[in-house]
Length: 415
Image 1 (cartoon, rainbow, N blue to C red):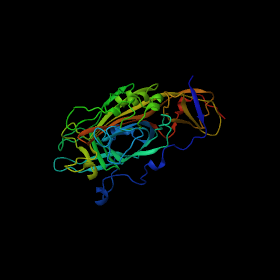
Image 2: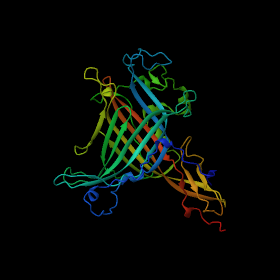
Image 3: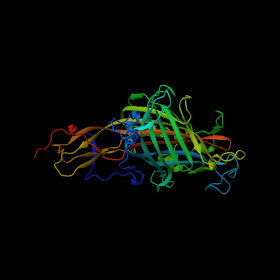
Image 4: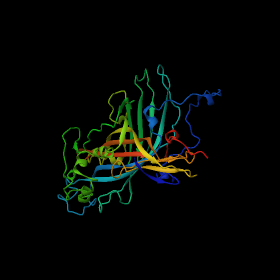
C-alpha cells in the first residue's frame, strides 16, 4: 500500500503571490452592441483549444543554460582563464543555473475581435495571460538546489487561440505566444493548432546547446561544455560538487532535455499532449518574430551585444496518475495529503485535499490525477559571429491543493 504524508489543516498555496495575475471585472467582448445601443446577445466564449490546460498556478524546478558575452572588466573567475577575457575564445561566459519557477495563468480573456476586410470576415480569439518568474537556486558549496534564490528571468505575456480563416489568409486554427522580457526582447511565436496526443509518457528529443556560425550549421564546441574543465569561462566554474550530486553532469550539458526525462522517472504518465511554438515560422502564412532594443542589436560595425533572433519552445502537457493513502478520520478539519515516497529524488508533487465532510470510514488508497507542464525552450542569441543556443527547461506541477474526488473515498462515517 502506498504511504502518505498528511498535514492538517491545509496551508495557503506556496507560490509567490506577487507573480499571480488578477484583473477583476474584466471580460473581453465586442463593443459593437453597446456602442450601437442594441440589446446584447449572449454568446459563448471562443474555444481555447490546447490552451484549456493552461489554468491556475504552477511551480517546479528545472535548468537554465546561457552563453553570454563578456567584456573588459566584466565577469571574472576564481581560476585563471586563458586567454584572458574578452579575448576569443574567452569572449563568452557559459552560465548554468539550477532553477525554481512559477508560471501563473489568469482567467480566459473572453471574446477578442479581430476585424476582417472585404471577403475576410471577422474572427474572435480567446486566450490566457501569464506571468513567469525564475530563480537561480544553485549552491556551489553543496552542488544542490539549496542556494539562496536569485531572480534571473521574468516574463509577462498572453497565449491566444486563433480560429481558422478561409480568405485572407487561408489558414487552419493556430495558437500564439506573445511575451515580453525585461532584457529588451519581445517574442511573437505562432503555430498551427497541435493535434499530437499520445497515451503514456512524452517522447522528449535531445536538444543541443553547442554554438554555431551565424547563417551556417557548422558547430563550434567550447571547453565550457565539458564538466570536468575547471579553468574555463563558466559560472559555476568548478562543477565537482554538482557532478557528485547529479545536478549538473556531462549528459545534462550534452543534452539539457535530460533534466526533463529524469523528472519523469517513477511517474505514471497516462497521457501527453505536445505542441511547439516558434518565432521562425514554418509557413509563409504564419506570423511572428522577435524584436530587440538597440543595446542588444548593436551597430552594423561592432555587431550585436546579444540579439535574440529566434525562439522555439516545445510544451508537453502531461496527465499524471498516482496513488495516495487517505487515513480514516472523523475530524472537522480538511486533510492535505501528498504522495510519498516521491516518484524520484527531489521531485515536486502537488497536494491533495480531503474535505472534512468525506469522513472516510477507514484508510483508503486512492488513485488521483493531475496535470504537469514540461517545456524545453531555445532562444538563439547572436554575438561575436556565432549563434549561441540559450536553453531553458522545467517541469511544473499545480501550486494549489487539488480536491480528492469524493466518489474515490469509499464508505463514509455517518453521524
